Picture 1 (cartoon, rainbow, N blue to C red):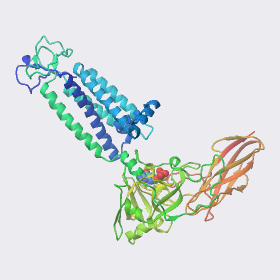
Picture 2: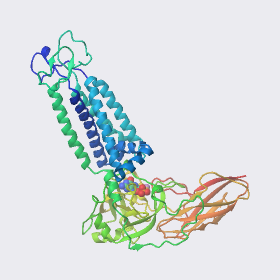
Picture 3: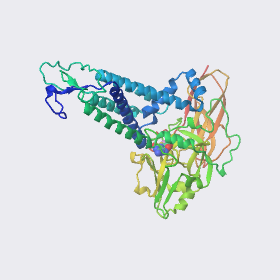
Picture 4: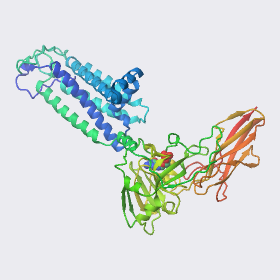
Length: 559
Ligand SMILES: Nc1nc2c(c(=O)[nH]1)N[C@H]1C(S)=C(S)[C@@H](COP(=O)(O)O)O[C@H]1N2
Ligand SMILES: [Mo]
């Protein structure tokens, strides 16, 4: 690649007479394997490290991204052929095909480098671009940094290429053409060292001894790096860990009455499915923690420190509860609220085992990625269904929602209770702790504001005069329950909406309201009254610092 004027110092003798050596066909092909192998090993190692510390996604692994892209781009007929021919082993066949392709490309890189290292570097760069394309076009979670391992790996590959094929200056003869084209060398592999070389004419050439030394060292390092990469925990491990688990069978199941749903067309369902459940967290990429590696430490102001693993947690009684979760950042009318059926162990029972000491009033909860929150101890011990949840809507907790274990505490916003990827709980005092969001000015203690929302119609709607219209929505006031919902048209009287059957005071209730459309532009508002008789706050306040208030409204036109 880059020529240097400095004569090499590791070969003795008169520079003018320095022998020139060029790698033969097989040496070049092998060097190509070393170059591409080193690039992949570095990239995989960086990707695995990034995944491990939680700043990269699975897509950051070039082999995984390429493999997924390979599967995606394989035409249907070929896939069917593979399944027909290889049956269960169709994925192995695919992997084999990919490995073969990579080996061929590597050999091409090596052979090109033998004649024109610069061109080989360009070929490598194109390959890196292809890998980046594969990384960033994954339908799975991809973060902006996920291409970095491939770039670092690619740079390493180019560097190895340079080390192996760099033309070192072998002559100072004035006749030397400046940075001349590589010397064409006849193949003399089978001959002895001396015969393998010819007296240096002019120009530049690689050094034989260094070539094999570098190739050998890089090959060993690449194999070692690749091995390390395989042993680091990854999102693939998390997927495997989740796939190997089943939601536990709860022994304490909440009965769900009929009529919890009003079934108004276009109304969000009473249970929010996992794929549609809102997600809020500071995790740039999803933390990767397997059930096997999970461990929860409960310490601080306790008489009995607890360290429990996943099986220990499952040994506790499992309860099943349907609970509405809400984010403090939810704007009036927003969708950062959802209802799921959770299975897990009761926090109050486990804290009783830990023997909480006098004077404690909070817990500092830490997730595996370092996120912290403080939750009021009361809410965890007053008998409400606060839980260490392991399942969501009958499924093992999804990774995005805190796998393997998260907290769910009725009545509290997520940022002061619902720690995902929970690994540590310190029993403490509010006066002694700051947590991620409270440090940023959000209220240290905030109970969920009594709220209601219009879901139907979603935006501006148009109706015809005389049309029978149904407005619908939800209302929530976890821990207090919903007593009524009222609807107001154009600032008129508040009128009672019909409510779904209550499930518990910790779940939202659906409402609907029938209206016969009259000509003109109309504004519809809703408000709710909670189980304590308190009417929802009308004043509009933003989510910061303790949750939004105000009434949701819609404009509709009728003509
Ligand atoms: N580890 C971790 N847990 C977390 C958060 C977070 O950023 N990191 N965000 C909290 C917030 S603000 C909310 S509203 C809920 C959201 O839970 P969900 O993403 O499962 O809906 O998770 C809570 N738990
Ligand atoms: Mo939140």
